[in-house]
Length: 287
Image 1 (cartoon, rainbow, N blue to C red):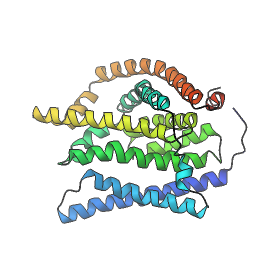
Image 2: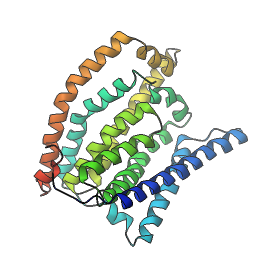
Image 3: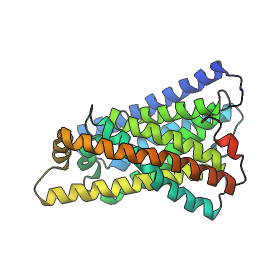
Image 4: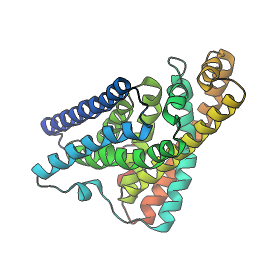
């Protein structure tokens, strides 16, 4: 690993800004819920998403403007090759077992949060739900966590530390233990693939695929169980309470995760090579 002077002061300042962003964003998100409940209406999930993301991105924009920087450039909206795009899709598939493992493992201690919230999120507006899940979340969260936070943090601390910390805050962003676990893993992978490609478009692509697949699967499962006269949340909780099934899933996904980890490294190196970036630098933390 290359040596780098750690600028703790600026790193802590940046984390302070992120915390303020979270407080403001989620404060407005909760405010929307209070107003909707008071008015006796049901606001679509996308409204809550906009209330969360818009003020956070505004704070990031104003902070960077004060520093004399440009949000677009800071995020790294650089072109990638078509082959890199397809390698990124492949990387998402290859890396997914690690997401599955952390998701299942976390359910030893907590409920499947998305299963519990799916019915409320979809409501009567499945199209708006999918737009919020598959488009709005990947774009806004990557701008905030990878573009703004990670790309700035890595100026103050070694890349590995920045990747781990940005992944950690990506997990915190979801405000529940279940999603925190697999979001942390994904956040680290997103940081590395962006470094390999030199562009935020790779993590956005991965985030889009993960959320689209997850959103569609949740919608299908929710609709299926409703047609059977059952609640998806109850079915998911029943499955989680089956210790034999959970242990089997943990073992299977754990074994798959081992191969997933090595294949993920190989594809990230291939992306770096394809984009003409330093392959060794991409993997300097693995030593």
